[in-house]
Image (cartoon, one colour):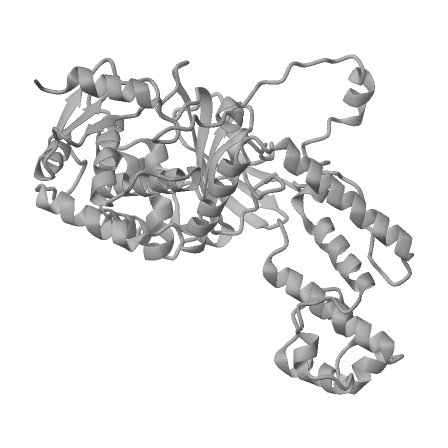
Length: 490
């Protein structure tokens, strides 16, 4: 993972302590005697791998005859220290991990020219990596920012929950699956009529005619399905949440997150969903499939809705993944410490997940009608996962994408006790991001096929393609306005 601000501060703090200690001719042993602390602990502090307690920090400052504020200064104490910090930071970044080469310890014994050259090489490598993803950079950075925000707040937005509850109650909802008629009643209460048409613009998921109070939706491909209810609720959400025209791709993505959340909060309202989940937790029988069936939504929608409610109301941290059959991560969320693979910007979309994770192991099963359960031992701990596979038509869904995919919800080992499937005997070990785990072919296969194979790679269009710039990102304005003019009442 990229170094956080805290990690960077600890590195700088450690280098300042080392700089002042050596300037005074003190060894770690000598400083340890003065502050009554083990030299091994001081070494961890100087290398930025242990945060010192305030008492120890004060003792160090006193022993070095400087104020505590000087130790906490954000500026490196010297040019060499700045280079050491830069090298340390670069070698903790995901880009370095993917190289599969050993780290170089930025010690005092490392010659200055070598240190400068290593830092320069890392900076150039990072620059080239940035250039390689320049086309989708704006979207990926904005999406990463939103994901981190959601993870920090346990993906729970009380203001959207409250608005959704008010509207569904006003429309007469009391429990179970939210019916199409109830959704239509919600629209009517807001002054809109839902209409299904065959000629919806190809670039639009729905079109709202604000002048005439109409919301145009595609026809139902599956009668009674959850998709059209969700699309209608998302269209209403723009009005309920008082959205303005997005001025950037970041605003467009944020609005998508908000309308998707609102729709989910209507389809599985908190005041009904939480008691349902609490009862299943008491029975130690939580299951995504039961949650899905109770509210008449898709498995993916149920899994994502769990991320809204499980941590805030049940005290359960968890992760969610949607993964393609090729192993590429399409969508992910985690507040339980599961480390997603990510690029130099921190984006996870399109990254290949470990072959040992349940999200990919599930594709090897013959029986895909039921959920697949697995424990996975990782460098970040042991996780239990429940995975359901599915497939889409060649045309894909409203968000693009087609073919086989898997939906995974997982929790740390300590929380598996609340879920059905916790007694599974399936267990795998993953050492990713170590390339030796699953990224490098076996030595005998490398020897047999190196220089003799030439595959043609598949393009991940949903990740590489930039959205057209118009009045609304990603929408063909001319097509939408022509559509409205055609369908507007006389």
